[in-house]
Image (cartoon, rainbow, N blue to C red):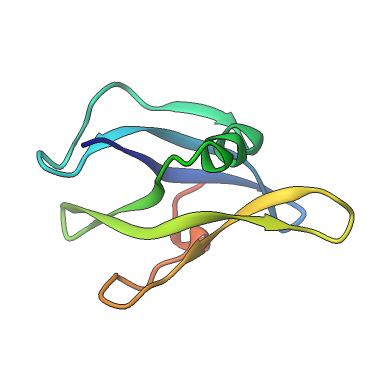
Length: 100
């Protein structure tokens, strides 16, 4: 089973505008295809379509899936994303991902 994973973000005015992501296979702990940089709206659309989107971190040379990503509505109507830490997951956030 593949998961959409985000391993880098671009911030503008405290909001994520772009992400580096791709299809990741947790069974093999490897990318299925090269990552691409996309507008955050593509992540929001994937979430609306029921896709699982996770953060992905490299710690000590090993790759770990981090918290699930969810859509976050802002007061001005803009929809962004955030990472939601659940029990048993590493406590990392979008702020901990490298810039793209």
